[in-house]
Image 1 (cartoon, rainbow, N blue to C red):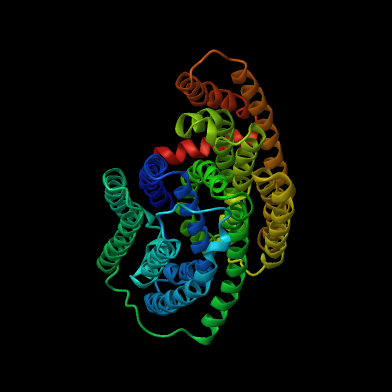
Image 2 (image 1 turned 60 degrees about the vertical axis):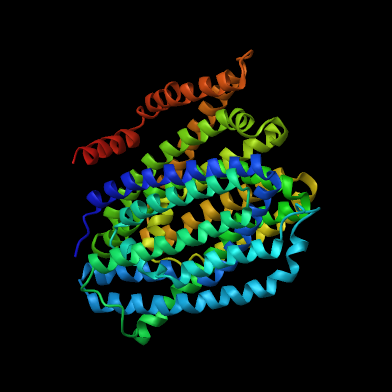
Length: 507
């Protein structure tokens, strides 16, 4: 069966954006309420434990992504029996993972105090809070989480988005009411657990009704097990790299700089991750369609399609990065106050980090769609090890700036350049110079425009914080995108990509 990629992608993006608005705004309100009602240290605790649970979730080993990848071919061939066998394997693995997370939680519990520099709030039990986070993670594995893989493989992520939007809205409202009226952090966490259970149960019911012909039963052949094993090993290495890049940054800050600095970092990273959430909607929506294309179309067709998507994606990402540069400090001052701002030079690293991650996103979708998990293992190991070493060295000398600098350096060298070499060596086999020229030429445009508009806006003085935020927002939403569009339209590749996008939107 050939998936209707354009229709599904448009639908997934639409509902994904709605979901991301909720995912961004509600936690933003909740984080603000936590700071006001409980104190900024609680944001540091929340950020630290989220990071620890991300590390514990490493036990998932990337099996979910490997299962979805191995569903692309059976879906294209309407092989429902193999899909059911994959789903059953996934179900069994997730039950085991839940048990492993509990055991790892028991091991970590005695050492929680060593992960926090300075004192914690007097009225909180670190161990109890930690186990509420563990419970939420375990419940997500045990309560039908494996069934969402079917929606991802069939490119019906819109269903996940719709359900997530409704449940997250209700849970978020309940959490805000709890924080405002009784200021109880434990009840706040219990709401998350209840929301996770309800979300997974509803997704399970939807999957059963949408795909009644797919039965979760049977075992996998030795050949398919071996194939999944290789993919999982590659994905495991990739997950380790992702953890060293994001969660270990937070843990290092908590250990060496304290909960307050961790909370400030968390506030800045929250904005960045929120914007990442919007771009990930596109990536998630494309994933199954790209996997389907790789299964049935030529490398040449996929290469040309990848270049078009890459041009559109980094053009939008460049605008977002410049907007971050111009709005970050005024917005953070309006939100949390001057006392919780990073210095300007630290702030600069966040939009830079954001844009470098976006440079390789579309190419990574094609790499995953081609199943190059194992081929990426060496460059991922180098990125992860280098990032940890640089984090340790630079956080002591430069604080939070050192953490971000370490991540930017390793991400650019190993994450962008390294992974580009891997996919062109193992899949496309031609056109790498054209791809790199496209990337670096757009990067130079965004650097030049970003420096100019940042300098121009900083010359404007005598405004209140609110006036400053409004002025910069208007400028970044009108003058900036128009200017970037006029500059980029002089390029042949941008004209072709823009024309393709217009045709797609009219369908």
